[in-house]
Every structure is written in C-alpha cells, then in structure tokens.
Image (cartoon, rainbow, N blue to C red):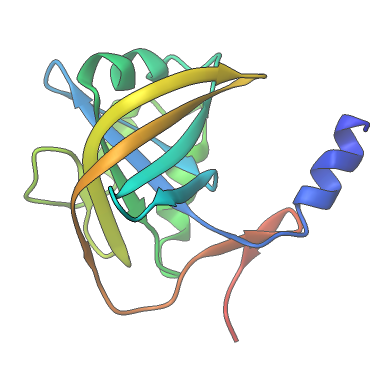
Length: 155
C-alpha cells in the first residue's frame, strides 16, 4: 500500500490527543502523540510510539518513566506547542502549568497515567514503548480529538 493512501485511511480513525512526558537529568521532555493505547488491564500496561529520529527517545530510554497527559478540548495550543519541532523542550514547558508529580503532569487535562517503561522496540520508523502504569487520575471535560488531518470536537 502506498504511504499516502495508508495515511489517508488511518486519518479516518479519530483518536484522542496526548502529551507524553518524562524527566531526565532534571530536564523535562515531551511530545504530542495520538499513538497511545491501553494494552492490558492486569497488569495495567499502555503503549505509545515515537519516531526513531526523535532526540527525545534518549530521555525516555534513560529515565524509564512516563506520564500520559490526556488533553481536553481546551488544550489545542498545548498540543500544537508540543507537536512543533521548532519549539525547544524548554519552550514547550514554559507554556504550561504542571501538577505536583515526579513526572511532568499537565494541569487542566482530562486525566493522566504515570509509570515505568518496561520494554521498547523499533518497528518501522517508530519506537514502540510499553509502560506499566503505577498511578493515574481522571478529570471532567471533553477530549481533544484528531481525525481527517485536523482537530475535532465532540458535538
């Protein structure tokens, strides 16, 4: 299948938007992702994917920790800030308020999951990370969604 057609078909599938974060050597790292899903309930395991070319991989692999920040429909600017390769990691975190936590948890989201990376493997042009969830919390609101090449909202 051609890459453009594959992308077009996958774009029909609506996904939630997350910002996935970690801390390594006292510095915060994060990126916008819709490639996140639950894998197992017992034990609680998730997965997320990051491009192999991303310099952020080194931070996740060294820290072995993660926070999945599920964005609300009021956090489109946060999604854009963490998606842009033009923004440094420092600039991304200057634009947000964090909840008190060992791993960066963004205030105002629909929820978060934190835990430890238990495995990662290269699949094509991405690295797939598997993480054991150790904590999390949900909040009220509506999700920020992505489909058909743009943000979508419920209703």
